[in-house]
Length: 281
Length: 261
Image 1 (cartoon, rainbow over the protein chains, first blue to last red):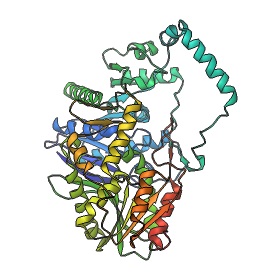
Image 2 (cartoon, chains in turn orange, cyan; image 1 turned 45 degrees about the vertical axis):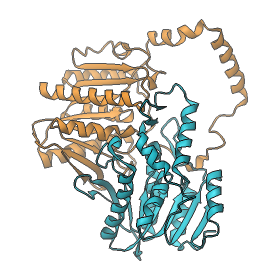
Image 3 (tube, rainbow over the protein chains, first blue to last red; image 1 turned 135 degrees about the vertical axis):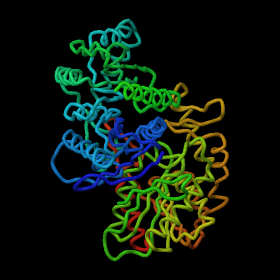
Image 4 (tube, chains in turn red, yellow; image 1 turned 180 degrees about the horizontal axis):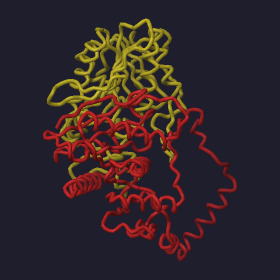
């Protein structure tokens, strides 16, 4: 395994780290590891580094990089949205690996906003053959409401708490707590907003038509949206995923995966899944 | 900005060298020693901002990751605290060569300040800026233990059966904790031409350090209340940048530290 720090793309270079295995096979897809929110390319709890190094043991090349303005990549001027710049910058990363290493197929991986960017690039770039998403777009179903509100509706404590919260809310002004000076707040360049479900369902159908393999890991950190194992597929019941989609739901895992055992599970699962996709490709 | 790997080929360290972006180029280079764990993740942007402002004043700067952390080589559990001290020494040498200067100063935040202080015994450091630095390894462990006690059922904050302390996704082994507990700035102050303690709030440990060191000619203390808490992340991924304290550190360097009281 060899790790090299790189600067790629124009006009302002993006900082990237390419992890090249001992035996590089350019016919094998490479894995692109994307930023999660404002976290730099190390990834949540060093997840990106650990995945890259484990993939290298299976002779899979990976590249982790920072989008412009995040981590070690400088800002790029312009008025484009994160949605637009992220697609352009992932494309630059793929172009680089295609030109320099001859790699023509890619698997994209991301958590949260990285999951969204994975979906966005998979939609528009034919070189993407698979994507791994942690906490991707998902939508509530009637079963979510039953599971969420059902137990609470039967609880007297919940009713009393709800009443107490409502009374308190009337006195509390909206906004940040007094300890937070909003003049010093630097908001993330990407504020996560879920598109309309039908838009995502339509996009997923397009990915299915291109035989894109999808691996979705759902954490308990999205419990306000998803609260049971079958919900992801049910929320897209109009999409016939066939055997292209694998979903795993971990209700006790938090969004940034702080528990060491879950970190191991996620790293192993992702690397195993990617190896399987590559061997079937 | 130049990202690169440096140091020993068996355990390379990741760093980003930022050459000065304005004239005149200073003959003093600055090494930034990061804190640990989520504090490292959350302060990354503040460190980058600090770097860019120092560059604009003509200072070359090196940011880097300790072994077993960030992009540097190795697994955290295989790394010792002595490795981290050695890494600081390696980074100092790298910065001297890259920036072509012999005059090195260090900024250390939280655990980074404590490690830089411990490493300073074997280094020639001009100015050592201790930003919200822990007074001792025991203080650090107590801080973490108190946080862990607040969340008894947490899967992300706990001490396992081997004595490894898990805190928000990062772990410190029993050995690492024992090694850190030997560091105590009260008993063994850092060695540098100038020591500047800069605090964003008045906490008892830093106050004690300030009083203990008040008589030293080479020591100064600066309280800069920073409403931009570098360790803050909101629910939407927004972060607070401690602009005041970043500007204060830049001013300290730019004014040769004469204004620190």
